[in-house]
Figure (cartoon, rainbow, N blue to C red):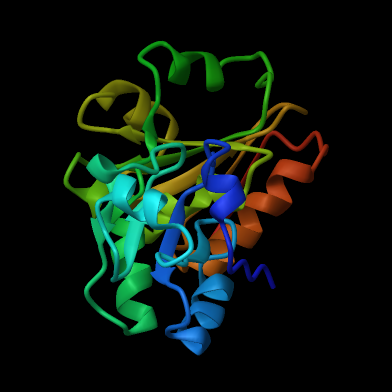
Length: 215
């Protein structure tokens, strides 16, 4: 469990990880729980605005709970977190995370081509752009699985490629392209199972060209 409570030193070192800061001395159990729930997504810490008055003045706050994007701990980028419910805070933090990266225009043809992928990549194929926003928890995947690139492809833009290689009636679905060649298709949508599956696929070196997995 990663539980971090003091960030005074790191904050001056241009902290490169997403962070949430509480007023020091408050909500110890909540901080502890959030540190576990947001492991690998955001650091959780406190700032003592009595001993670090200049720092709090620089941030423009002397009390409350605030979220800061990675490398942007300043007054302009602080976002207030009003709720003290852990689930609501986690949902809010996820909403602040950047969306999955869109696959590049010429990348899909190369991935489905005869050459093996140069790095493991998981592509979330969705029927349209609106569907890409339907699972905000998927935005956590790139930070939780750091040895595989995770992107999405809008099949409304890649109609021919999607129709040629996928069963578009079963979208959305994840396809994991392996460096050993070939790809794996997953029709499941449960987040925890999907996370384990992508992690498993990224570590495989099997030569199987294609395998479809159903929930």
